[in-house]
Amino acid sequence: MSQVKTVSGPGLPLKGDDIDTDRIIPARFLKCVTFDGLGEQVFADDRTQLNGQHAFDQSQYQAAEILVVNRNFGCGSSREHAPQAISRWGIKALIGESFAEIFLGNCVAMGVPCVTVSSEVASQLQALIAAHPQTPLTLDLESMTVTMAEFTAPVALADSLRQMFTAGTWDATGQLVAQSAAVKATAANLPYITWQSA
Figure (cartoon, rainbow, N blue to C red):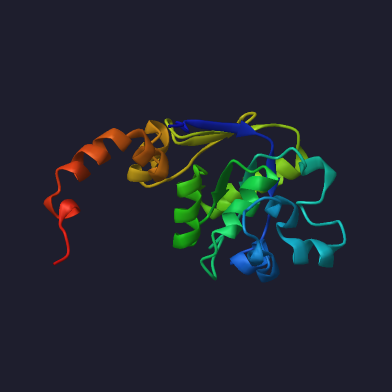
């Protein structure tokens, strides 16, 4: 299982409160059988309306790996396609003022940490990234800090989630596969597994 202790890379500032999952990935893209290709459609309608001026379209952010957002990001419907689209575009971590609970849970299940910061820190990071888009950020889940050049600020994440990332136990499916022998041994000793219908 893969540990997530640090994420480093250029940032992408996306300003605005209450950005919902319908905006992150419009409903017409939910018909897909797999998540392949969803990254290309992230914020499809917003990007069309802004005609190339959306942050996800701007050339200086095309290598971004850390998304910096504001309050209540990922609210709305509980579609897991939203974090999948963001991840498949190339984002490996999110920093924001707050996240919708289901969106956060879906990100954790994919190994994508979502840490929170104060509104002041979010604004400072967004401004720094806009001024220096090639300067990498480092999110450190052990020291619980985000650093960009000389700027360092504390981040927050529930301790249980932080431990899941740093220990590599965030992947529930991976844990089941890794313990398949123990699962089979337990199943073999369950009396009702061999019951016959009368």
